[in-house]
Length: 218
Image 1 (cartoon, rainbow, N blue to C red):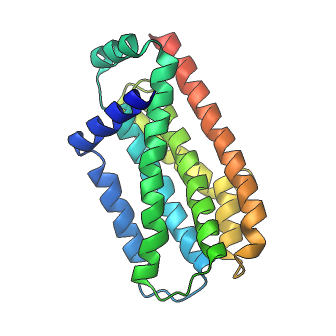
Image 2 (tube, rainbow, N blue to C red):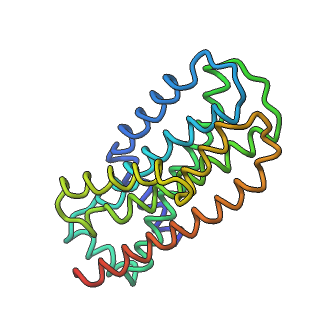
């Protein structure tokens, strides 16, 4: 698995398809957090929302790197479609971890804040919650599941909007609402950790759907 993840990470790096979502993420952070001196919880809510969008894009780019023929060769080399999918998920998580580090640090550069440990932990929980949800969306909208790119983009947009706007249903919506309405990071650590667990479950469901659809189509 380590060799597979290293291969996928390297291919993504050499393809430079990470650049567009990376630049979008940095650009959104610059716009949303520049000259900000408010509570870090609200600031990290903006960073988490930006990471949701970028993690969807990043995952779709990662899973769609190889055409059907090359992916079949990779599956044979790895030994199973499930291992290949798990490698893609792990690689996407690694990329999102890098973006999470940027999402924690750049708002401190762009704005004026005096962070404490609780702020940073809350920010990491929030961004990982959105990242896991975004990876799940990216998986079910990826090329092996939705072959037509136009349909995939429309589906991704609908699912992202649903994640952001579905009140009381989506962990992302609950998370962003909580972060925008508090100035005490410590008080939200527990509930945000629960939302992170829920988002992990969403990611598992997204991976299961992707695996099932891929098996049926192939």
